[in-house]
Image 1 (spheres, helix red, strand yellow):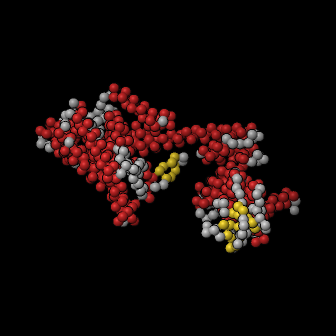
Image 2: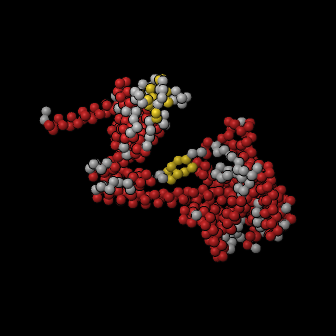
Image 3: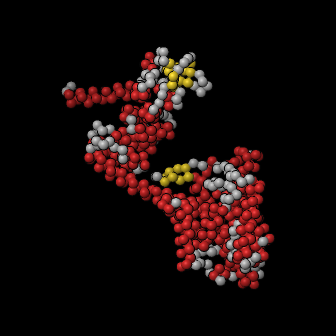
Length: 534
């Protein structure tokens, strides 16, 4: 057999032997020798012991390294025996896993170098785990540590991996090791940089920016080009994230402002107690959850479906009572109405403080609204997504109600021309009361939604009343489509301004913009015809 054939066969046999060595379990004697290397005060020796045990294929590798990570690995100075301390305070022999009397021991210490070795070793040990999530976490650990000692296990795992996402993570980890290896050929390192670029996140950007000083010029140029492309991609995803946060904030503003838009448009009342209707909806959610927790804890995930109609009815009933007892006596006197509703808001806040206390109340988020997922580099949280969908459903339902029901027809008639509507036999006083109740009820629904993302406290509504008025004025008084556009516009603009101007200054800039905008369009984006113009 000539050398051309013999040499590849020898290399192939060596590779098989290496893989077999990784997979073959070590004997009890080998385990004792490997574990005994941890009985030292030298951090470099401990890190080398971690690497040696991880690559040995021993079944004791994982429990020993986990014990070291958790500060439960100790040794006895006299005979250098190593033990693992259990949760109950007992000890087992690290080499055999059997119960043992440790006597007087010293802990195996860690520093940053040892921790990195432990992280890389745990990653390599779990690359073949049956659970795909554990394999993915292991690949991420190797990517961050860039430990060349895990390369052989990583290569073997890639060959056996069937999950496309996990395999991609493993290939990125292998590429990270290749990029960090100064002895690797430039062509291989440049190819690996392309893999890292496709990952395109902050970890990839940080890795490309930490190349050794002696890196060859072609590799460094490739890394800089890839880093520039990643920054451009991250800027795009950051803008998308701001749009998502803006839509989320806009949905909250829509829920808080849409009821105000109805009452303001129909009755011309500046309701300073509207924020307290939102607060009442949030506290109704708290009360409903407390009742369900006491009566049927298993139904907690369905608590919001009970809280929504209850919040609407409670807030709506309070709204009707306020209109019948106070506001109907003050029509045509805008300043007195503003002062009266402001006084009502103070009374409601103090009543809630006296009943529930001044501290925040905990509202449980159902399991189906917990968690998040990613689209590219865009993080989508379940609770924000649920609020956006809920706001859209409330808006659509309100449009149908106002367009397709007799009460909606009467409401639109009163909005456009109150005197003519009264002349046609519409009881305008009851339209006012029920419309005020409808607006208050929708504010209660907003309180249910806000209880999932904000603190439930007596001051909850105060944080949204000014924003709600800004939305109504900017979009056009009494116009639902204007309220929708205004809420989304202000929500997105606020989230784009926050990173540069801060939360407070961002709102001030938006307020200045609206003031200037109203100078040009006093009736907002979508001016309502009829009574609203008079």
